[in-house]
Structure formats: C-alpha cells, structure tokens
Image (cartoon, rainbow, N blue to C red; front, top):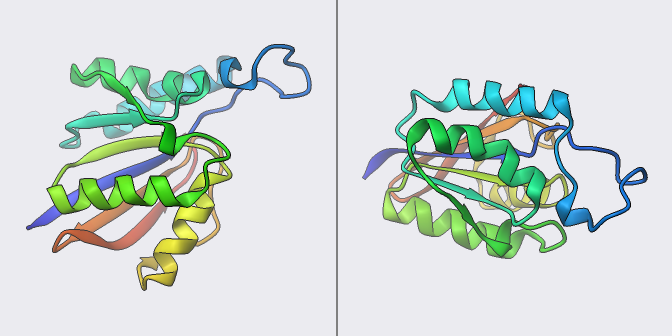
Length: 157
C-alpha cells in the first residue's frame, strides 16, 4: 500500500472569541475565512480525496464545506478533531485512515494540530516545518506502508 495522503487543515479565519457572545463552537468564519475556504477547495479539488472530516465547530465545517461540495462529498463530523480534545483521538483517526488506505482531509484547531504533529514527530515522522499551524494552513501527511511517513507544511490560503 502506498501513495495515500491525509491533509490536515487548520480552520480558516474566524471571528474574534472576545467579540463573540454565543457558544464558541458556533463562532463562524469571517469574510477572509470564507475566501480562505474557497482557496483551500481550489487547492485540494484535484487531489484523490474520498473523505472530508471536521471538528464539530462551525468554523471547521465551514472551512471544508466548499471542498466537500466540489467533490460531491459530505462533511463527516468527528468529536476527536474538536478543540480541547488533545491529540489522542485525532491520531487514532489518522492512523485508521492511513492503515485503511483512505485519502482524506481533516479540519481541526490550533490546539489539536500542533499536538498531533508533535506526537507524529516523536514517532519519527519527518516534518519539514514542525510547529507551524497558521489559520487556513494545510499539512500534507504522506502515508507509506499504512502509516504516516512524512509531513509537508503548506502556507495559509
């Protein structure tokens, strides 16, 4: 098995936490964030993506919705990708997708993604720019023999 890719996307630009009075999980993207989401869709539309997964947070779902729509897929919501959940569940999800040979896009948060990358680095995965995780950025995780072998950072959309 080879040639599988998992793209780990940090949600696009959302409104300020301090200016938002509702539940944080309902905080939407701002206009710049919607533009970033469209750019992400354009960047990944030609890839062999078969699943699009997201944190339950609205801003994550809005980030990958244009891509899912373009590909004719549904955004699958997974609690493991939610803010504050730490890396364990997200890593288990990545490992499952990698071992199953599934090309997928996962959208998560600025607290989860760096922890996932740190754990991957501890496993010996070669990451070209460890610690980078700007809003709207994409980590391309290359899978070889059923597990993540390397990761390449993509600048924000």
